[in-house]
Length: 627
Image 1: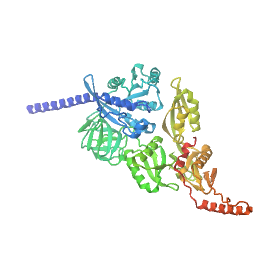
Image 2: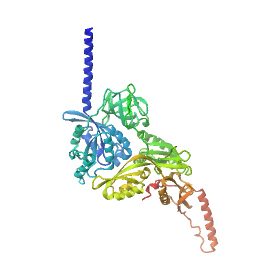
Image 3: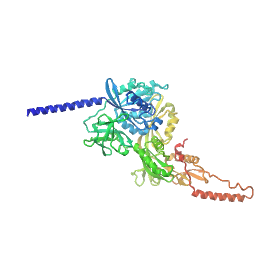
Image 4: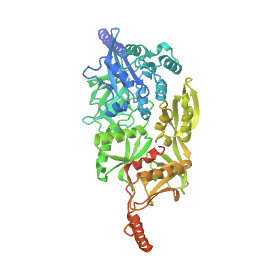
C-alpha cells in the first residue's frame, strides 16, 4: 500500500512539474511576442514605414520587395491610401533573443473607422506616425483616441525628417503637447531612406507590453478582418486573447451562432504558414470553407464548441451603411451581368449592401448602401475595372427616419426619396447628424466656418492646438457632407484642412422632397430630400444645370422643380426650329402664318408623344451645383 502511494506521488509530482514547465515555456513564448498597428493620417508614410520594417526584419526577400507591399490593390497604389487592412508576421533578433512581431495594418480613411477600431483592439501597442512637414491631422487624432481607449502603448514617430520642408522641432512640440510625453520619446525617422528604423524596432520591444492571456482558458479570439479566396472560401484573420485553437477543431462564431471545422489554421507571413496549433497572444488565419462573406463579421468572437467562453469580446457592431445611391446599367440588357458583378464584389467586401429597385427613368438597377463617399467611388471604379461594367450612379443620399401622424412612434426607414410618405400624412422627418472635427491653419478659420455654417453646421468647440493650427468641432447633418463638402473644404483652405467625423444620432429636421419634372413627367432618379430653407436655391440650380446638359429636341422641353404640387422653379430648353418660311419670298403674310401654324401643331403633337433622353452626366449634376 505504501509503495503504491509512493508511486502515485511520484507520478503526480512529474505531471505537476510538466505543467509548471509548460507554463514557464508559455510565459517565455508570450514575452517574445509584440502585437502592434500603425496609425497615421492619409499620406503620412504608413505603408512606406511598413515596407521598411519588413526589410529590416528580413520578412521579405529582395525578389519580393516592392513599394506599398501590403497594399495589393491597384486602386490603393494609385491613390496612395490603404483600403483593405492587412496583417503580417515578422521575426527579429535583438540582443541574442528571437522576437515575433505581428503588424496589423489599418485603413487610412474615415469611411473605414470601424475596421480601424477592431484592428486596434487586437493590439497592445501602436506606432503613431506624424509627417514632419504636415504635422498632426484630424485622422491622426481620431485614431489616437481609439488607441488610448483600448489602453495601447503609443510610440510617437516623426516621419519624413529628411524633407527640405520638414519642421522637426515644431512638430515634435505638437506631438509632446498632444501626448504629454517627453521630447526624447519621439523617434525621428525617414521611412523612405530607412533612417531611425532600428530605433523603432528597439522601442517596439522595450515599450510595447507582451500579450496577456491564459493558454488553458476557454478559446476566445477576436476577428479583425476577412478576405475571400475564390478557391478556398472566406479566410478569417483573428487574434487569440485566451486559449488555443487546433487544426480540425470545431469552432463557433458567437455573433451568428454558426459552427464550422477549422480545416486549416496558421500564421500570416508574406505567404500563409500553416500550423497545427495557435495559442494565446498569437495572430493567425482560419479557413473553414465558408462561402458567404456575410457570415464572418469583423469584431465577432471565435470560441470552441467543447469548452466555449461565456464572454464575447466587447465592441462588436453590425457595420451600417451611411450613404445610399442607385447603381443602374447603361443598357438594361446588362442587368443580370451587373447583379453577378455586385455579388462577386460583395464576397470581397461584406460592408457593401444592395437590393434590387426599378426607376421609371433608368429601368432596373440596385439601391446600394456604402460606408461613405470614398467607398462609393471605390465600388464604382472596381465595377468598371474588374468587370467592365459601365454604370449610371444616381445622386447619393443618406438614410432618414420618417414618422406619420397616424402612428407617430413607428419608424419608416427612408433610403430613397421616393419612399417618403405623402406630406399630408407626415408628422416629422429625422436625419443623421455627425460630430465633425476639422484641423486647419488659423488663416483659414473664417473660410472654413462660413462653409460649415452654409452646410447647416453648428460650431461646438474651437481649440488652438498651436498658434498656427486650430481644431474646429461642428455638429452637422450627414447629408450635407456626402456631396462636395470635402472638395470645397480643401479649396477654401488651400489644401491645409483635414477632416474627420463620427455619427451622433438622429435629429428632427424640416426636410422636403424636391422632384424634377421633364416635359411634365417626374424623373424619380433626380428626386432629392433637401432642407426646406435650401429647397428653392437647389431646385433653381438643378433646373439651370439640366438645361445646359440635356440636348435640344424638335420641341420645347420644360424643366421644373416641384415640392408636392407646387412648382418652385422652371427652365425651358428651346426647340430646334426648321425655317419653314424660307421658301416664301414676298407675297401675302397669310401664307407664312399658315406654314407656322402647321409647324406649331406638329410641335405640340411631338411634345405629347416625344420622350426626352437624359445623358449620364445629368444624374450627377447635383454634385457640381457650386461649380
